[in-house]
Image 1 (cartoon, protein in one colour):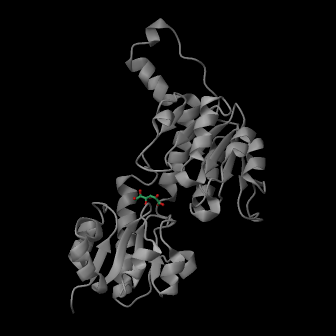
Image 2 (cartoon, protein in one colour; image 1 turned 120 degrees about the horizontal axis):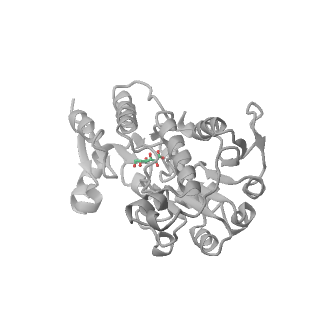
Image 3 (spheres, protein in one colour; image 1 turned 60 degrees about the horizontal axis):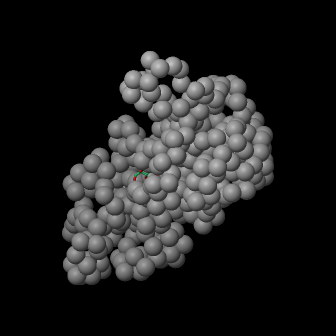
Amino acid sequence: MPAIDILSVTKLSPFLEPQLHAAFKLHDRLYETDPAAFAKLAPQIRGIAASGESKVPASLIAQLPALEIISVFGVGYDGVDVAAAKARNVMVTHTPQVLNDDVADLAIGLMLSAARQLPAADRYVKDGKWTSGPMPLARKVSGARIGIVGIGRIGQAIAQRALAFNMTVAYTARSKRAELPYAFYPTPAELAANCDYLVLITPGGAGTNKLINAEVLKALGPEGILVNVARGSVVDQEALIHALQNGVIAGAGLDVFENEPNVPEALRAIPHVVLAPHIGSATRQTRQAMADLAFNNLKSHFDGKPVHTPVPECG
Ligand code: 8YV
């Protein structure tokens, strides 16, 4: 059987790349490095390996007449034009479930870090400032109110952890989930007005673009802290910077940004924000599990078997 040509559209995880190399003929971002070679090869490409941050627009799909499957290494697939893929009968898969714990752990970590000012505390000791007096007092987390924007698999994992901190849990989502024991608010602004920590874990894409705007931040208020482990696109970043600079909200813990990996100097200069470089799923254990799932989706497809985790639109 001739080798199956797969195009990667991202720098692949070291857990995934060797598996793909062993099973397929892998072409790494050829359209960027060698457009002429890509034009020649394009008619043969049968699969795409992408990541959660990858862009797979309709224009790329249109250049690949033999494309059968797009395998995303990540739960989020907002960069993939799923409608264009479906119109061509191209399967799209992702890696749900296996990263729930890691992303939920990081959300709690960022909430604690921003509230208790852990990076500043670390610098305080290392810079020898402790001998001149104590640090300013921080903000309590246990017993406070957490508001979760998006109550899917990861949102529920965050809620579970928050319960262990005796927090009151509320959420907003497209619709109320009757089976969940948490208070539902129909809009992010209403949720923000009724919580101390607003945690974002809703999918990216057009439906949630700049969902968290100046109005929502104002509702969160000067004691409120924003945590984003979703997508940078969910927040109006300019409005957030303005809110942080002017005390509209108290602080933030951010793992995702509008134009990664570029983070504006204005945001980096604010002392009461804690920033992370999109590491929600970045543990060895989880990245291995994601790689196995992303690989097995491709393998099963080309073995003529059903894929393991299609995106809901293709399920
Ligand atoms: C990335 C993510 O996919 O799962 C997601 O949606 O954003 C991440 O897990 C990961 O960083 C690989 O690029």
